Length: 117
Image 1 (tube, rainbow, N blue to C red):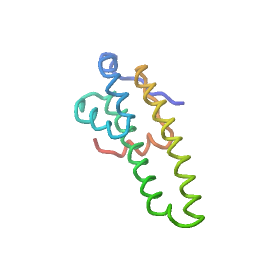
Image 2: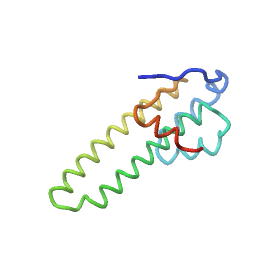
Image 3: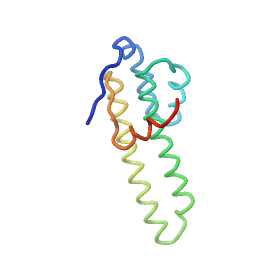
Image 4: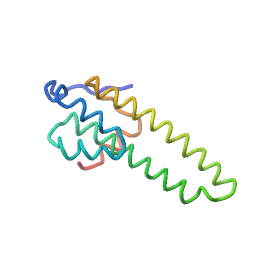
């Protein structure tokens, strides 16, 4: 697990809870709107938003293709497994935020850096 350091300690101490909220689905909008000026919150919020977008895409894939016999069942199982993994990763991100650390989530971090927020 690769951590990023170099955040302002005062920023981290003041914004741990808001950074943690970034990993709670739609609640990612709260830190994005409340603390745009906090680099610590912004980095966590980018990853939280990327995870939330991935969840929505997976739900849509399941909704669209889940009704197809056999193939739909396979897709639904894969979607649910992936959603469980995203849930676990979100929990880890939340814990890291509460500890005042930042973890580069594999695959998600690079995608999140492309989000212009």
